[in-house]
Amino acid sequence: MGTETVHALREVSLEIQKSEYVAIMGPSGSGKSTMMNLIGCLDTPTDGEYELNGHRVSEMNDNELAEIRNREIGFIFQTFNLLPRSDALRNVELPLVYAGVRATERRQIALQVLANVGLADRVHHRPNELSGGQRQRVAVARALVNRPSILLADEPTGNLDSKTGKEIMALFQQLADQGNTIILVTHEEAVARHARRIIRIRDGLIASDEPVIP
Amino acid sequence: MTLFSETREGLVIAWAAIRANKLRSVLTTLGIVIGIITVTLMGTAITGLNRSFMQSISSIGADVLYVSQASWFIESEQEWEDSQKRPAITLYDETLIENQMTLAKAVAPIVSTMEPIKYGRQSSSSVSVVGTSDQYQITSGFTMKDGRFLSAVECDYSRPVCVIGADVATNLFRHGEAVGQSVQLNRRPFEVIGVLEKQGGFSDENSPDNQVIIPLSQFTYSFSEHPDYTIAVKVRDLDEVDDAKEELRTVMRRARHIAPGQPDNFAINQQDQILQLFHRVAGTIGAIGLFITGLSLFVGGIGIMNIMFVSVAERTREIGVRKAIGAKSRTILLQFLIEAACICLLGGLIALMIAWPATLLLQRMMPATLSPFVVGVSLLVSALTGILSGFLPAWRAARMNPVDALRNE
Image 1 (cartoon, rainbow over the protein chains, first blue to last red):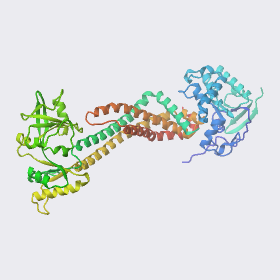
Image 2: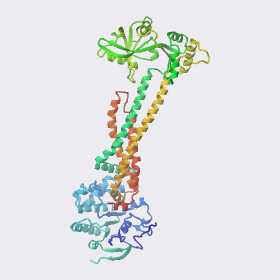
Image 3: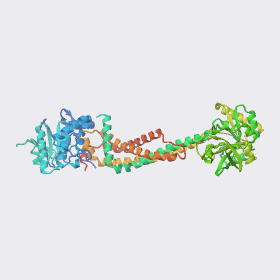
Image 4: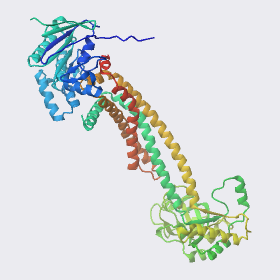
């Protein structure tokens, strides 16, 4: 019995500049998730190289990966992935906790970021006391709080109704305008068109990589 | 992130997790609670046992040799039969020892029997009546609470006087003074001239606190003409116990005309023998106790391990999120270790709260107290149990691949 090694991605070469707003598109099984895991430093490539903000991620060990995720990546998930027992403030503080920021300082930063995403009056609510849109805003605040190089959003509107989805996309637009680098992983054309560049993946290969013409 | 802040963070998380699953935490803790209760009570009981034993045999005295017909420790039926055939110890032996021994400080003949005692309408069904001489105060080392001990004159002239133990005094004279009162032994009046200080130890019939001491000649007159004598010989100096024992043996052998090579037809007993036996028995009890408590702690530990595996499994997603936003494996490991240790420490605290009143109950039987040492050991052991049994689940959590953990539903 042999196990066949399946390469989810092959011969992918990609460069994303600071302050870009990029959407990565592709049907399920296209290698889109693998791409996202690699960009997000959750995984390392079996072969090839990945350089993030001057760090050679492809050669890092688990500890270094954890550190670089903490400093350089802000994750936004489809299912929000907030800690259910912690209030909004505590959820947003968490990356700062792992960064070793002192309690008073991190509270101050977290409150500021929560206010920036419009949740100043919800800081002590737990996720189950918040609406879907509010939860995703908490998640965005958590992603922003360490001032990462990349905001990596995986189907951020997938669990939201269309109206709330639009609000979140407006928030992304605002963040992009402020100079944040955003990578949006989605299979929805309408969502992807918010970005300024769309990379399409099919069967582990980049099928197309073109700017969005408004 | 420093180890200190990681630990503090771990404590915050652990506390939240414990509170979120209150019932489960309590049930998990139960095993540890029972384990720690057994540890604590066993420790307390063993120290209590030791202490009361020491108190009990301290009245025997480390520097006192007891000559009697039979050894205190008969190891076979044959030996017992042989010792019954030996000549009885007599007052003549006592006189010889008193006259010939150079290393003795005091020599006292001792006879005793269990008898009822009466005072007015109060009575005690069985006290240990001891017939002896004034020297008994020296060999026994008893101190007086009230009054005085038997005098040489009272013993020589067979006065009907007695000295009573602390328990006898409290039983008969609940209100008021014992000294000067007249008690009845075998329907004969005895004047109480002194009360002994409480000796402590196991409170049984043979305890010194349950004694009534009368002049030897009164004893032979009232109870038995040819009693079974024991001769107590107090050695001048504790360092000379072995020499004195040898001298005593020589005196006795000469008195009985025992030819060289023939065995002794008497026995010389001392506290040392009891101590040795006690240490052997206490050691065995301690080892068995340790094994049983260890077993119950082990079972408790397995309970913790089980529930920590469940906790890790149902928080897989959380672990994935934490790792994604920058938690290192070490941080996750520490978080779950701290959680397990906290559950166990909580169990330890609950156990101590239960064990404390339980030791108060134990106190009725023996001088047992919950020592800070036992408390410290209990808490240490419970935290250690948590860390040991939490390690495997925590390790599994720490080793999780963030991609797989995040995918977990």
